[in-house]
Image (cartoon, rainbow, N blue to C red; front, side):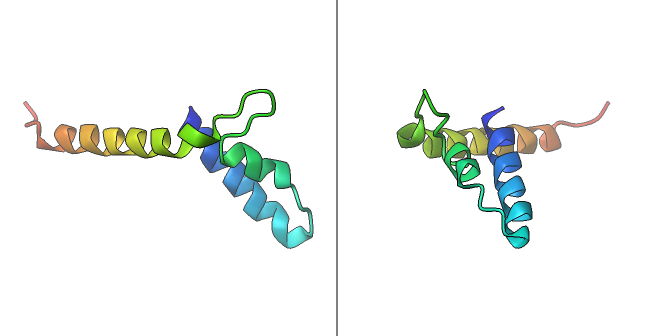
Length: 67
């Protein structure tokens, strides 16, 4: 879920930027600041670890033989 939030908020910001809409609050969400709760110090490392976990599990699925 956090990776999806990061992808969607970054995508929305980059789509709105050419139209002159400066939605800086999307960048706050993208970096882990959710208003009341601020996860910015740990958000990026957690997303990085989760990305490696997804990569590792995907690679192990490729190594399993099909029956």
